[in-house]
Image: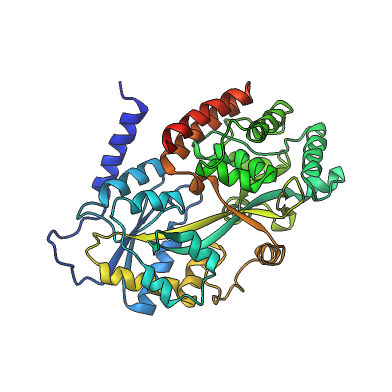
Length: 418
């Protein structure tokens, strides 16, 4: 009988065999075709955007782009990790920021792109550069930035006479009024595993952004009273019925429930609204949004960078670096971000393509003195994050003991950070 681990290993091997294979030999080939793989063929499906980016890249640089996608994150990460040390590695690949890049950088299989960052040093903020810097080197280009916030159904809010919450207590009061009206206030699910962290990061970053960062990096302990309070609040919200059933699918059920006014609010990235709401028939005019504030009244937002990395063993390394150079330019970064409707990272890129909603979000972040924290998926070391996220899933299903789950998580952290 196959265990889950064995299935993942087998899936990783099969995925590796599916990767584009290049001619053997130590010398770099003269090909002007660069390969890129990504995990964006699930929901939402970004593969068509990579195809369009390839057409634009060819017109601008003469370099062709061969894109391949994977629908499963587990299979994709196994395939990338297996391929990087070999001659079968893709030239470029999408990944996740923070600890995910750090883990790969330690293997020595990434090509630094620091010189290209230096070329465009006046086009990227110090904060963005610092967030991608590891021991003085940079290994990724940020092709887009997204923020996590709360979408709300304007019809539901109007029907119940609700206003956008200005404080954390206002938010909880809205949740209770929505629940009293027989409508589910918020989304929460363990389907596909990864979304389990969504509620944790929203509550933790609202209680105290510094505490949230400290818990992710091992500088604070989950057994501290303030950390236990996060799970106590989370348990209270579950017990009061503020969330969808854990079996609710984030990409199919949640948009449908929202459109049918059975779900009042969605915690999601700014990438979620177009592909999963508007494109599925929810009128943009009925979608409102707000950032949750910290409990002490500060503006805060959770940041999700989208990086692309270069394989050190790429057979087309020179051409891959030319692609990175173009995609970091104002024109190239604009095109990449525009394809997915994301926020351009190059400060000189034209952001006029953004929807009115995203223009408002960008203006709010740029002018609101926001504290920015990195999404949990990228903020905690990858191996540990996956283990902790499993504990989040268990807590969602059975939130009996905040103290117990915090003790279990701290044991994992102690073992990792020892």
